[in-house]
Image (cartoon, rainbow, N blue to C red):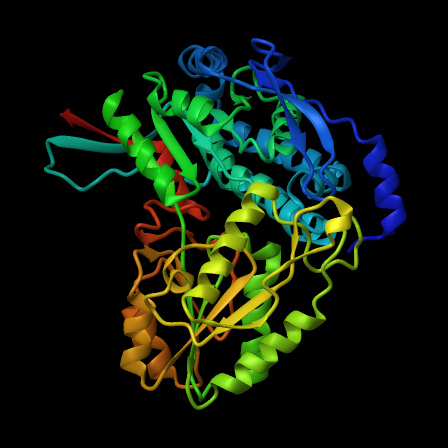
Length: 496
């Protein structure tokens, strides 16, 4: 829980020291000297000049990671020692929690309460989870013929390139970095150009926690330059990416054009949230649907942006969501009472408004919102938006908007609901509200999604894997399964 007031957060924001230098081989580096302005979507003000990395900076970071992997101590440490280093890093994240949350809130517009209580909690817990897991993994010795001994060992895969988005800049970075480090890999992390500052602080804290030079490097820059250089680099063994499906395709091309590095993708979503008339609590279902689409300004790949609701209860549920949208407090991200902050920037706000305009022109009914707000602040704020009378063929129902825009579609029977839910190129997540246990099991199995929430949404913890099907990607973050992305299986057969 936050103890600071709005004025106290404002005061701390003025004192925050935000360095925009790359962190390579255990030290801050300016690179070639080119910079770009990191602009806060809260008010349009420049937070810092950030090093604009390119091929040369990526080469330097990858070379440092390669030296640390090939000749350094990190992959050769006992797993328990690696785990203790990650636990020290988790402790530092907890110790600097207020200032890190403030950094996240300023750079991407997230409400300070969410940045502190959700984003930073997730980052701390992720490093603690993998720190504790590092020495719990076991190799295998399959039963073979009596004159042979077979060993199956997991070995670190090498240098990992991790390219992460701006919507959860520390959470998703932690989901990539922590298991890769626990496995014994070294990492080159490239944050989004919209949220570089928190990732740079993570790199410095890793060095402060005692990770050897070159084990975690952070290079800032844009996707077409720095991201592409990581994807094409012949000394990067594994690429882990979270972002859009379109960019995910580029990374697959980069792998094919370079060294056939393994590419793990967590991509977009257009998640359905199905409410049946026998939902155990329709008011709770509606409130959760509203929270799911408006939390984090709707900038979530799992956001339940398609509400599929039975015709018999559609108006009741929609009215409840519209009412909640009207009550939602949109405001300064540094005010602890704010429930929805700013979208990440003007360019993204423009894209979301374009989708809203398309929805209106295609015949959907705008029930609330649809316009920007708080323009006098200089920030990128949007009113929470709800459309109903949405046809499955409309852009609102097909394309990922990545904003606080809900599309309400109706159905008459369960088969139609499942068909509508699966009628998308994505397969990241889905929700289902029902009191019938058989329906819960049958529909969950029928939905083509990596995660299905029943009578809840966005619940879970680090023990369960997260990832998508279809064009929402492959591989899994979180849980012990994440380590599979950063390790290689080696078979050793010994003839006795």
